[in-house]
Amino acid sequence: MVDRQSGVPAFRQVAADLREKISAGQYAPGDQLPSERELVETYGVSRPTIRDAVNMLRTEGIVTAEHGRGVFVRPPTTIHRLSRSRLSREARERNQGAFLADASTRGFTPSSSVKVSFEAATQRVADYLSIDPGAEVTVRDRVMRANGLVVQLAVSRLPRDFTRGTAIEQVDTGRGGAYARLEEAGHMIGSFVEHVGARMPNPIEASALQLGSGVPVVTVTRVAYRADGVPLEVNDMVLPADRYELSYEWPAD
Image 1 (cartoon, one colour):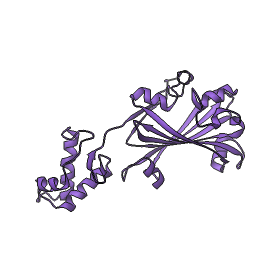
Image 2 (cartoon, one colour):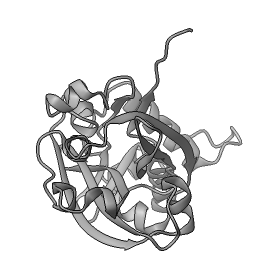
Image 3 (cartoon, helix red, strand yellow):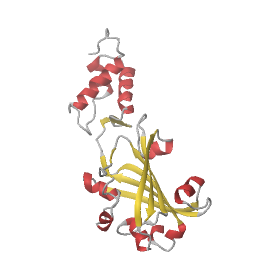
Image 4 (cartoon, one colour):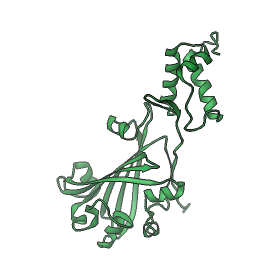
């Protein structure tokens, strides 16, 4: 029952109790919470109070509400993104580059959808790729899923001069992905640089990633460089902050 003398709003007390029960495993991932009517009876509060409590848990990303079905404990989907090895040439040769390497590490089933298009480079893209603004670039727009759940949006842009006549301009780039095709075309990759940030998602991103209100995204902009320092690709990624763990390792030189 709610403590009316505590000074803590009733909906916060209900949310705290439900949160504790979820943390303790009383409600396991994927379990449905009791109905609104049952929660009203359990806590001795009004329906609006219960709704406010549930909305708080939704904002925190703890539960999801499915129209016509009820409220469910959100299953944890944490993807371990280990940058040390996910982009290695060895991983590409095993056909486990990038996202496939993440899948191998965490044991989820990966899938993706890809759209290929061509556009004129903006000033930002031109700066990253060291090309003139307006120069033609190949765009690979991808939606990545783990066990059917969208977990990453990624848009790669490459100078068209490097992709023309290669499978990079096809939806299926083949074994080893776009980086393997670049190297086959004589562009040996020498290094990668990643710029990581965080922000709130825009409406399109929030919808595509099925994010609850208040859930931020991690942004990663990766630039791939040829061995001689020429930029080959800029890849803009958007990751749900509640589904990813980014790990970076480097030697103590």
